[in-house]
Amino acid sequence: MKGEHSRAIDMYLKVTPNSSDNTDAMANAWEKAVELAMKFVPSRAEDVTMVACERLAEIKYYSQSAELYLGIEMVKEAIDMFIEGELWTKAKKCAADMAPNLEGYVEERYVAFLKQKGKADQLVDVDVIAGLDMMIQRGEWAKCIQTAEQQGNEVLSKYVAQYAAHLIKENNTMKALELFLKHGAPPISQNFNIYKRIVYEMVSMDGMSSPDSYKLWADMRDVLYEVTEGLNKTKNAGSAVLKEFEDMLLVCHYYANRAACLQQDSLDSIAAQISVSLLRHTDIIPCDKGFYEAGMAAKNAGMENMAFVFLNRYLDISEGIEEGSLEYLDNTDFMDTDIPFEVPVPERQYLAEDKREEVKEWVLAVSMDQKVEQVLPVDERGTYAASLVAPSTNITSLPCVITGYPVLRNKIDFKRPGRAANKDGWNKFVMATKVSHSPECQDVLRFLGQYCGVPQNPSFSFG
Image 1 (cartoon, helix red, strand yellow):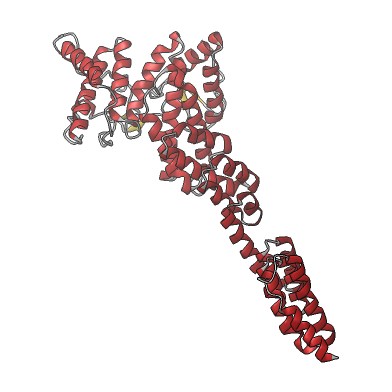
Image 2: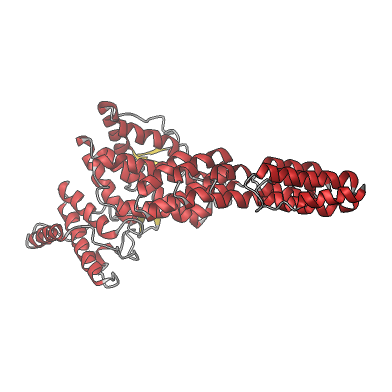
C-alpha cells in the first residue's frame, strides 16, 4: 500500500511548471502529493513539501507555498514566500505569531520593498525619515513638509531647513522666509547659516528699499526675533552668536520701520535718520548700498555736508568694488565714528553705471561749491551725531528703537533692559500712527511692544 502511495506521489510530482497552462490544476497536483506524503509516507513528507513549495513559487502561488512550508515548520521559508508574493500583512502576522525574532527581518524587507517601489506614503508609516527622504528625491517638497508636520517639531524642523536651503539655491529666498514664518524658526545651530543667508540675500536684493517692502522686512524681523528669543533661553545667552543675530534683527527692524516711515510724509526725517544709522551695520548690509542710501537721504533732507561725505565715500567704495578690494579707502572722515572700516567687498555694484554717473556729477558739482564742507555733524557730546560711541568719554549710548540715533537726554525707557527711544522720535512716530491709522506703523508698534516691553516713563506723552 505504501508503495502505491509513493508511486502516486511521484505521478503528481511529474507535473512541472512547464507541463500546462492550467496553474490551478498544477497547484492541486502538488498539494495532493504533499497531502499523500503527510498521511501515508511521512518519511518523504519534508522532501515532497519542499519540491511542491518551490514549484508553487515558480507559478507565483506564494500563499499556498507559504502554507505548505508552515506545515513542516519551516517558518523562515514561509515568511519569504509571503514576502515574495508581497503579502506583507501575512508575513508580519506569521513572524509575530511564530517567530518574533524574525519581525525585524520582515520590517527591513518591507522598507526595502517600499523604497524600491517608490511608495513614500506607506514608507512613512514604517520609516518616517526614509519616507520623507523619498519625497524629497522626487521633488515632492510640499508633500514632505505636510507629512513632516504630523511627526513632531524635531522632524518638521529638519525638513523645513532642508526645503529652505533648496529654495535659496533655486533663488527663491522669499519662499524660504515664508517657510520659517509659517513653521517656526528654532534656535538650532544647523539652521544658523540658513537664517543668515536669507538676511544677506535680502539686504543685497533690488527693490528692498521702497515703501512697499515693509512686509518682507517685517517677516524677516519676526523670524529673527523668534531666533534671538530662543537663543536667550539657551546656553547661547550672551554669546557671540546671539549678538550676531541681535544685530541682524536690528537691521531688519530698521529697514521695516524705514519702509513704514516712507509711507508717511510726516516721518520723512525719521526715515532719513534710519538710513544714516544703518551705516554702523555695513558689516551686514552691502557698504555701497548703505552709503548711497544714507547719502541720498541726507541730500533729500537738505543735510548737504553729510550727503557730500557719504556719497563721496560711496564713489570710493564703488571704485574699490571694481578693483576687488577696499583696503586703500581713506577713512579720515570716519575716524571718530562707529561706522566700521573692515567690511566685506560687495559681490556686485548696487547701482547701475548711469546712476553712478549721476552721483559723480552731483559730488563734483558740490565740491566746486564753497558752501559745502566735507564734515559730519556733531552733537552736544562733540561726537558725530549718529555715533553710539563718544570717543572722548568712551561712553556708549543705546540706539533709539525708532531712529537708530543715540539716545541721550530726553529718552523713553522700556521694561526690557537695553532698549530706549528718543522722546521726540517716539512721540512723532506714535502721533503719525494715530493720525494715519497706518497698518504698517501699527505693526511696528506691535513689534516694539514685544521687543522692548511697555514704556516705563510716567511722563510718556503723544506730543
